[in-house]
Every structure is written in structure tokens, then in C-alpha cells.
Image (cartoon, rainbow, N blue to C red):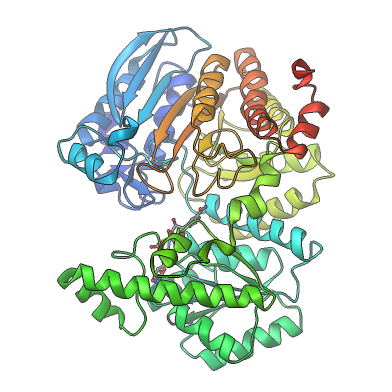
Length: 555
Ligand code: NAD
């Protein structure tokens, strides 16, 4: 009956309210979050169990999913479920404070770790791509990327513009699934925004969801609006239909040098993503199918022009950075020898946050009641009155972010702050101020949980970019500490062969057990980020570590 109501392929939905279907909240929580990941409001393609990020899945296939649901409905708190690439493979004896679910997704022995081999295994039904939060059951829809992008733009403002982006023009390409968060993130951060996308439907979607203010087909109109808005220090966003490489070249020819330039076109895939200049969308789609090799050649040529224009803008004074789409790599292939002359966004803006143990802390209200999230928002604003930046984000998020699936919230918190927030939430549950337990988790893109040399660990101070002992230690620390489910994945964000990362989610059910687990897990998890960055020689991390006394053993 439960399956019929909540897990009837492909209509998935998490139960709401405070009545248990499983034997305890420890199993009810992963059950609800798994089904929430596949909710039509949350997932890109529930019929294929795809949550986000290309082919990132929550479970291997409908049968495996059904079995996971059945096990979570009946398992007690003296056991833990083993999930191998989205399929249940065992139940082991553990104890009350151990994780209830142990997940490993998409992992391959390094010599075999490429897309080609992975896809062969996938075709044989042996493995699944888990992305980051798809296969670890803590994806919360576009709010996650919105906040991450906002955080990046704010950090850019702090580093280069005295913390003030008003009157600054930010130009970028790509308003797709993730890139579509850029206009709202930029205006929330105070900037004037111009985004270029070849596909008018993509821009229209951002307009419909209120992530974007104005859409136009006219370069002249777009320029007039943004230059006037920049002058008047108005945070307005304009989406222009066009090819990003062409538009950047035109801006240069017209002597318009933006303050900030980045890009989120799908350059990571030069065949099925990036659109070459000179082709209409229809022509591009046709050529992709008919002659992928020719398509790729054309795309690489345009990417090279695109990056040359970005480099020229950098030369003329723009702050330019790569936003994790590998565009520099393909430009280099296209003959741009100095493509890596501008940095990726992590070494530029995010690493200093990682050095404070800051990262994408997020939580969801298992009751399904938005009021529970507003209650947690208020509690955080009270608990951290000095954190003006966080308060601004929470206030704006309440106004502008529509919930998808179970109501949830994200905000970047650091070492000490995460533990404090967790304990406050536990009190809220205990006192009944929120109507059912909460789960707290995070993206795998965090300070101490990922090795990804082209992104999160690009250009580490000591050259340790590709060492993946760190996410493994993170996994072990969170397992030992008593997170409610933990995961270890390969290939998230940048694809098979390029990253390894760990996830964790912890149940906040108002109990003493939860309090003990929160004190360990929500402290240790960001502390791993401090250890990782202190070990690599980052002064900021050493300072924070010393402040918390967690590096005393080194003396
Ligand atoms: P997407 O495929 O949904 O959107 C890409 C958009 O780019 C599409 O709307 C497409 O029409 C447009 N486009 C393609 N070629 C273009 C061109 N030449 N000029 C103008 N527009 C063009 O992809 P997405 O989910 O939005 O992600 C975009 C890229 O950014 C990916 O490579 C992704 O990996 C990267 N990304 C990285 C991070 C990160 O590192 N944290 C975050 C977000 C996105």
C-alpha cells in the first residue's frame, strides 16, 4: 500500500506529517529523502530515476528502488543497509548510533575509471552514476545552485570590489539548468547582469520562474538597458539570445569591458552541449546527429574564440574566471596556449571559505510544512546576529525561492556554526516548535569531502590536488561519528575519472542520541576541511584550526 501511494513508478513522493511509516525516524528519514529526490517537482526525469546533472540517479532501477523502500520500512536500528550503486546488496549488524544506510556509488579502480568503461558496465546493469547529491539522497532542487552561485558572486565582490557589486556589470554565457541561477544570484548580490544563451526557450524559462528580469533578441537593446542600469547602480538582469562567443567579441569591438566575466555554457561537452557560432539551433541539432566529428571541430573553434575574448577582457581590466565547465581545457585543445591564464572559481573565491570550514550546509523539513523552514530561518537569524551576509540570504530566500518537494534551506556555515545550528534545530524538534524531525546534509562540494583536481582541489598550495585520501577520511569520520546515512562517490560534477567525494546526512529528531551524533558529526565534518587545508599549508585554515584548538596536537 505504501509503495502504491508513494513509490509507484514514476510517481514518487515523500510522505508528509509526523506519523511514521518505518520503525523509527532513523529509517523514515532516508526513506522520505530518497522519495523526495525522485519527486517530479525535484527530479529532472523521475521515469529514469534521474535527479539532476546529466544522468545522476537516486537508485539503479525501479526494482532496486522498491527493494530499498521495503527494507527501510522494516529495518530496525540495530542494522544498516548497504547500497552499491543504487541497489541494495546487504544488511549488516550495527548499533543505534551507527548510520542506517551506507552508500557507495560509481566507484571504479582508477586504471579502469573512464566514461567508456563505466558505460559498458552501466549497460550491463552493474553500476549507476550517482552524481553528488542524487545518489546520496539530499538534492534539494535549484535552491542549492542558486545559493552557491550567489556565494561565489559575493566572494568576487569582496575580493575585487570592496564588497560592493552595485554599479558593476557581470557578463556570462549559458542560462541552462545550473547556469540559469546566475541572473538571480547576481542581482541578489547587487550586480547588473547580462547573460547570453543561444536557446531562447532556456531564457524564457528563467523569465517564467522569475530568475531573470528581461529577455531580448536585440544586442543593442540589451546593451542600452544594462549600461543604463550600471550607471544608475540598479541590480537588473537581462537575457540576450545569441552565441556567447559572438557577443563577447562584439562587446570588445564596441569597447564595452564588463567588470566581471565568466561562463556557464555547457562547454564540458563539445558535442552534445556547446553550440558553435554560425549555426542556428536547428542546424546545430541536425549536425550533431549527422556528423558529430565536424560538429566537435566547429565547437572547439568557437570555444577557442570565446576564451580568447575572455582573455582579452581580462587584459583590459575585467575580473575573469572559469565556472567549472572545463572551457579552458577545450580552448587549449583549440590552440589557445594561455587558456589557463584565468583561474577557476574555487581557487579564486571558494577556497578562502573552505579554509574556514564553510560549505553548502542544507536541511529539509520532513513534515513537509514550509512553516518549519521559516522557524529554522528565524532561529538562525537569532543565533547569528553578526552574520549579516547569512541574514540577507535567508531573508531574500524566503521572498524569492520557491520550495521544490519537501521544504528545505541551504546556507553556507563554517566550523562551529554547523554544530551550533544542528543543536538549535534539535531543540526546535524536541520542543515541538517544528512539527516533525529535520535532516541536515550538504553537497559533496565541500571543504573536506572532495578530491577534484579540475574544480574543488584545483591548484592546491602543496600540489596535492589529486590525492583522494581526504574524502575517504571524511567518510570514515562521519561513519564513526554517527551520521544517519553516508556515501562515497566517484565522478560527480566533472565526470568519471576526475573526482572522488563523500556525502553525509544526519537526522535531527530531538533526542539525546541525535544531540550526541550532532556534536560529533557536525563538528568533525567541517573540521576535516580545516585539517585538509591546514595540511596543504593554508594560513587561514591554520588560524581557524588554532582558534578551535583542533591543531594543538601538531605542536
Ligand atoms: P545546461 O546544458 O543545462 O545549459 C547550458 C546552456 O548553454 C544551454 O542553455 C545552452 O543553450 C547554452 N549554450 C551552449 N552553447 C552556447 C553558446 N556557444 N553560447 C551561448 N549559449 C550556449 O548546463 P548547466 O547545468 O546549466 O551547466 C552549465 C555548465 O556549467 C556545465 O558545464 C556545468 O558542469 C558547469 N557548472 C559548474 C558548476 C560548478 O562547478 N559548481 C556549477 C554550475 C555549472
